[in-house]
Image 1: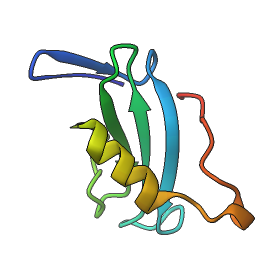
Image 2 (image 1 turned 90 degrees about the vertical axis):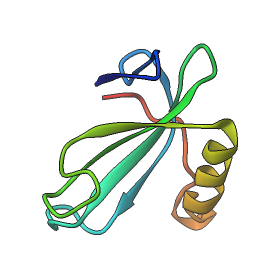
Image 3 (image 1 turned 120 degrees about the horizontal axis):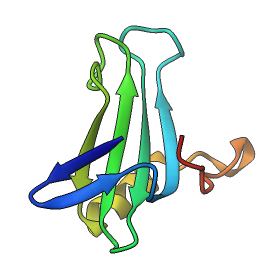
Length: 91
């Protein structure tokens, strides 16, 4: 997916995925997934997709600052026994 926000291009096909997090269970109308990406230029963004009642009823991209990206990784990191967030290839 590609989006242009304030003149900057964010593209899941060319950016590097730094991590992902699932909220809720697959198939739930309020469940969704977020993936954190970084572009070659160092711009961070979230790509989200989810059910009809989720914040991502329509797939979307939100620009993030580096600080927001660091907070997202800290807040959404999976505990080690379940596997840490690893680099996930873009879909």
